[in-house]
Image 1: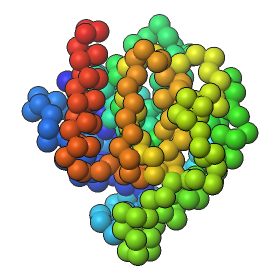
Image 2: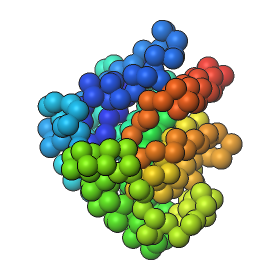
Image 3: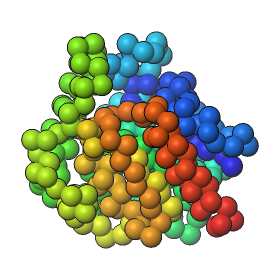
Length: 261
């Protein structure tokens, strides 16, 4: 079982390895993880330099559809040389990369095997610009929340918030949530089709980007997806309960891949 690991913006493959170490220790030894760095040097993600030193990387320098597509070409070259991969395990910006690759593959090259057979998304959403280019209808409320959540994440994840409030810094984005259920959030994006490989969606209800994670689950096939709210912020909690749950979901994804072979 070979796993491609895609980190968040302003971190690195080495940092991602550390971030998932607790639940990864609960997995079988025969799972191979490939932690890669994005192609662009980057400033550190908000607050990350308190815990990890440089270098830091990003998968693109701006969020345009053209920039994301260019990174697809870069990653496809990596997969051709180092793959194939059974599963992609992604965090934050890595989720944007992986989800857009699966969507464009489904639209443009469905006769070819997908870049990976299953996907695990942690604290990440899809690119709304990519979705709109592909004919998805994104509601004005989803757009407004997406913009506000990015600013809120920078504040809640920042160094001063970490030092002043610790874990209490995660307060989500209550001002725009409106008390919507997960199903209501999923209905904010109308999908002409859905990602059809097995998917796992792990997000935290106190993460300002929580709705983005729920939205991403909504553009994946219901019968092939599993979701889990770890209850925290934009992070991978290392408690035993969360680690056990993520490990179980990972094993579910492995079983889906094994069944399809």
